[in-house]
Length: 151
Image (cartoon, rainbow, N blue to C red; front, side, top):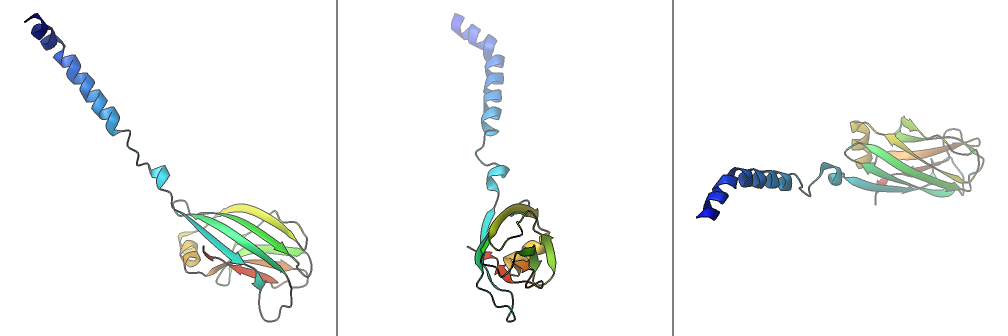
């Protein structure tokens, strides 16, 4: 009888502790928005920019798209350009959409960086309409391009 009376006196405290434990456990879900980021890998191999370009240049571009933020992290590597790089950027089926900075004015090299695409630019990337172009002193209109496609 004495145990029953003691339990009844603490029932409010026990109920409160059970409620707090239940709430704490439900907030510890393993589903997190941060874990749900969608990363998509793209790559492209450099080819002559057009039929008027004669080059033995080669290289690759790799890029990772974070679909949640539309941020593109990229790596560009090239070798064997006819003359040093004079400009480099992302094109969107024609027009320049984002410049690429930090490259060395050389016939071979690499550069990495991050840019944020607009929603329309991501749509074009997914459609295979985005490419990296390297312009050189010999070919100011563009020596090589690397069209980005899903890996």
